[in-house]
Length: 161
Image (cartoon, rainbow, N blue to C red):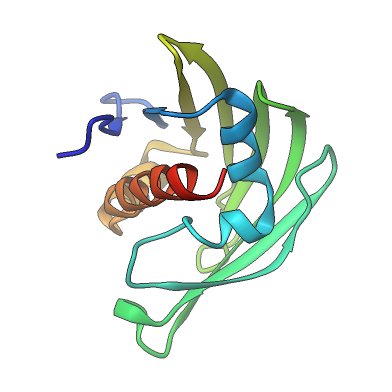
Protein backbone atom coordinates (compact mmCIF):
# COMPACT_ATOMS: atom_id res chain seq x y z
CA UNK A 1 0.00 0.00 0.00
CA UNK A 2 1.27 3.45 -0.88
CA UNK A 3 2.09 5.98 1.83
CA UNK A 4 -0.10 8.52 0.06
CA UNK A 5 -3.19 6.73 -1.27
CA UNK A 6 -5.46 8.09 -3.96
CA UNK A 7 -9.03 8.80 -2.89
CA UNK A 8 -11.73 8.64 -5.57
CA UNK A 9 -15.24 9.76 -4.68
CA UNK A 10 -18.26 9.62 -6.99
CA UNK A 11 -21.06 11.26 -4.98
CA UNK A 12 -24.32 9.43 -5.56
CA UNK A 13 -26.77 11.23 -7.81
CA UNK A 14 -24.25 13.81 -9.08
CA UNK A 15 -22.24 14.06 -12.30
CA UNK A 16 -19.04 14.70 -10.28
CA UNK A 17 -15.92 12.63 -9.71
CA UNK A 18 -13.47 13.85 -7.08
CA UNK A 19 -9.88 12.62 -6.83
CA UNK A 20 -7.47 13.59 -4.04
CA UNK A 21 -3.83 12.58 -3.66
CA UNK A 22 -0.96 13.96 -1.59
CA UNK A 23 2.51 13.98 -3.16
CA UNK A 24 5.93 14.35 -1.58
CA UNK A 25 6.77 17.37 -3.73
CA UNK A 26 6.30 21.11 -3.82
CA UNK A 27 3.35 22.62 -5.69
CA UNK A 28 5.80 23.86 -8.35
CA UNK A 29 7.28 20.37 -8.84
CA UNK A 30 3.85 18.77 -9.11
CA UNK A 31 2.66 21.46 -11.51
CA UNK A 32 5.70 20.85 -13.72
CA UNK A 33 5.01 17.09 -13.76
CA UNK A 34 1.41 17.61 -14.92
CA UNK A 35 2.14 20.28 -17.52
CA UNK A 36 5.39 19.30 -19.26
CA UNK A 37 4.62 16.84 -22.08
CA UNK A 38 7.76 14.73 -21.62
CA UNK A 39 6.86 14.18 -17.95
CA UNK A 40 3.13 13.66 -18.61
CA UNK A 41 4.07 10.89 -21.06
CA UNK A 42 5.78 9.02 -18.23
CA UNK A 43 2.80 8.78 -15.89
CA UNK A 44 -0.57 9.33 -17.59
CA UNK A 45 -2.61 6.14 -17.95
CA UNK A 46 -2.46 2.52 -16.81
CA UNK A 47 0.97 0.88 -16.64
CA UNK A 48 0.34 -1.53 -19.51
CA UNK A 49 -0.49 1.20 -22.02
CA UNK A 50 1.79 3.33 -24.12
CA UNK A 51 1.03 6.98 -24.75
CA UNK A 52 1.73 9.16 -27.74
CA UNK A 53 1.28 12.87 -27.14
CA UNK A 54 0.40 14.71 -30.32
CA UNK A 55 -0.02 18.09 -28.64
CA UNK A 56 0.20 19.35 -25.04
CA UNK A 57 0.24 23.13 -24.66
CA UNK A 58 -0.55 23.88 -21.00
CA UNK A 59 -1.45 27.57 -21.19
CA UNK A 60 -4.79 29.41 -21.36
CA UNK A 61 -6.25 28.57 -24.77
CA UNK A 62 -3.71 25.80 -25.32
CA UNK A 63 -4.84 22.41 -26.55
CA UNK A 64 -3.85 18.83 -25.88
CA UNK A 65 -4.38 15.55 -27.71
CA UNK A 66 -2.94 12.14 -26.98
CA UNK A 67 -3.60 8.47 -27.56
CA UNK A 68 -3.23 5.40 -25.40
CA UNK A 69 -2.38 2.19 -27.23
CA UNK A 70 -0.90 -1.27 -26.75
CA UNK A 71 -1.39 -3.33 -23.62
CA UNK A 72 -4.97 -4.37 -22.93
CA UNK A 73 -6.16 -2.24 -25.88
CA UNK A 74 -4.40 -4.51 -28.36
CA UNK A 75 -4.54 -2.92 -31.81
CA UNK A 76 -7.06 -0.28 -30.72
CA UNK A 77 -6.20 3.29 -29.85
CA UNK A 78 -8.00 5.53 -27.37
CA UNK A 79 -7.73 9.21 -28.32
CA UNK A 80 -8.34 12.07 -25.87
CA UNK A 81 -8.32 15.85 -26.34
CA UNK A 82 -9.15 19.09 -24.61
CA UNK A 83 -8.48 22.77 -24.11
CA UNK A 84 -6.76 24.48 -21.18
CA UNK A 85 -8.91 27.36 -19.96
CA UNK A 86 -7.16 28.51 -16.78
CA UNK A 87 -3.54 27.80 -15.93
CA UNK A 88 -2.17 29.38 -12.76
CA UNK A 89 1.29 27.90 -12.10
CA UNK A 90 1.42 25.71 -9.00
CA UNK A 91 -2.17 26.65 -8.09
CA UNK A 92 -4.92 25.81 -10.56
CA UNK A 93 -5.67 24.20 -13.92
CA UNK A 94 -9.11 24.21 -15.50
CA UNK A 95 -9.47 22.29 -18.75
CA UNK A 96 -11.88 20.26 -20.79
CA UNK A 97 -11.47 16.54 -21.40
CA UNK A 98 -13.03 14.49 -24.18
CA UNK A 99 -12.68 10.80 -25.02
CA UNK A 100 -12.91 10.82 -28.79
CA UNK A 101 -14.65 7.43 -28.72
CA UNK A 102 -17.68 9.23 -27.26
CA UNK A 103 -17.65 12.59 -29.06
CA UNK A 104 -19.64 15.47 -27.64
CA UNK A 105 -19.46 14.24 -24.04
CA UNK A 106 -17.02 16.87 -22.80
CA UNK A 107 -15.99 16.87 -19.15
CA UNK A 108 -14.75 19.92 -17.23
CA UNK A 109 -11.71 19.17 -15.07
CA UNK A 110 -10.56 21.39 -12.19
CA UNK A 111 -7.16 20.64 -10.63
CA UNK A 112 -6.05 22.48 -7.48
CA UNK A 113 -2.56 22.33 -5.95
CA UNK A 114 -2.28 23.12 -2.23
CA UNK A 115 0.44 22.68 0.34
CA UNK A 116 -0.63 20.49 3.26
CA UNK A 117 1.77 19.37 6.00
CA UNK A 118 4.87 19.67 3.81
CA UNK A 119 3.30 17.83 0.89
CA UNK A 120 1.27 18.96 -2.07
CA UNK A 121 -2.34 17.90 -2.29
CA UNK A 122 -3.73 17.53 -5.78
CA UNK A 123 -7.51 17.88 -5.67
CA UNK A 124 -9.30 17.17 -8.94
CA UNK A 125 -12.96 17.48 -9.75
CA UNK A 126 -14.35 16.19 -13.02
CA UNK A 127 -17.77 17.54 -13.94
CA UNK A 128 -19.40 15.25 -16.47
CA UNK A 129 -22.22 16.41 -18.76
CA UNK A 130 -24.58 13.92 -17.08
CA UNK A 131 -24.73 11.29 -14.37
CA UNK A 132 -25.01 8.66 -17.12
CA UNK A 133 -21.77 9.86 -18.72
CA UNK A 134 -19.95 9.66 -15.38
CA UNK A 135 -21.30 6.19 -14.70
CA UNK A 136 -20.20 5.07 -18.17
CA UNK A 137 -16.69 6.38 -17.56
CA UNK A 138 -16.48 4.55 -14.24
CA UNK A 139 -17.79 1.35 -15.82
CA UNK A 140 -15.04 1.58 -18.45
CA UNK A 141 -12.33 1.22 -15.79
CA UNK A 142 -11.58 4.90 -15.28
CA UNK A 143 -10.92 4.49 -11.53
CA UNK A 144 -8.25 1.85 -12.22
CA UNK A 145 -6.58 4.19 -14.71
CA UNK A 146 -6.69 7.09 -12.25
CA UNK A 147 -5.14 5.04 -9.44
CA UNK A 148 -2.33 3.75 -11.65
CA UNK A 149 -1.71 7.23 -13.08
CA UNK A 150 -1.45 8.76 -9.60
CA UNK A 151 0.98 6.03 -8.48
CA UNK A 152 3.07 6.56 -11.61
CA UNK A 153 3.00 10.34 -11.08
CA UNK A 154 4.39 9.84 -7.56
CA UNK A 155 7.18 7.70 -9.06
CA UNK A 156 8.05 10.42 -11.60
CA UNK A 157 8.17 13.01 -8.82
CA UNK A 158 10.45 10.77 -6.74
CA UNK A 159 12.90 10.32 -9.63
CA UNK A 160 12.82 13.33 -11.89
CA UNK A 161 11.41 16.48 -10.43
